[in-house]
Amino acid sequence: MKIDDGFAAVRTSEYARTPVSSSMFVRRAEEILNLVAHLRAELGLQEAINVAIERFVDDEPHPEMKRFGEVVVLARRQSLLQDRLDDDREQLHSGRLDHKEREVTGHHYETLRHEACRYNHLLRGLIENCGHYFSREQLMRWLTAASQGRSRWARGEVTGAVSELALHAALQGLPELRDLRYATVEEDLAGYDFVASWHSRLLTVDAKTGFYRPLTERKHGHKHLEISVPREAVKEFWVTRRGLDVLRHEVRQALQSGESVEHHAPHHYYRLAQSY
Image (cartoon, rainbow, N blue to C red; front, side):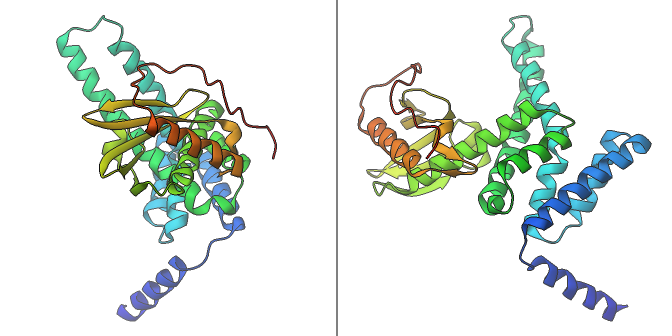
């Protein structure tokens, strides 16, 4: 028995080091979606998802395939969680809750935010490490199918993750920023996507999607930037050369600005070309 266990451990270790390929991701996505669809009628959707998590996440030794399995399997749960977040936010701003109800709803809201943020980091890490094995269209299709047709949710998740990757690439090219890193989940919940040092002072940066002027403000006693990442700055999962130039210009402009801006204004400059 010990010999068999030893051989099994060796096989598992060798598999975990096996290079991944595009076909592996396509095949795994099909396996996940087919399993959930097959078990849903018999066990119900939630139990089908639990079985898929056990098979394709908990029991998966390959790190990249494990991450991919978690992103795809949890898509339905995360898309529903977003609806609950929206409901909680509406309740908290409605003025209809008493003190006790606000406390309970607020605690529930923060718990859901933490879970959503963890998923965002998981998705971003998957794209950053494995995005060259599949296209943006493929990932969107898999997340839409896994979330039972919630294409708007899938698009928002992928767009947000890609915006952070694009801004990260731009920030890495700024020598005046030191010790640049992604924010932790806890820091992300406080409103930061990146943490760095600028002139020996703490700097935090938040990536925004759309067209806005760069926003600079004091946040918790330190300098904080909110930088727009236009959709045209990105092709597939990667920022374009023109996009890098624009983002670096806007970061430097915001860093040099001593003005504190309270509200975003429309983005009037550097509308990127649709094609490169």
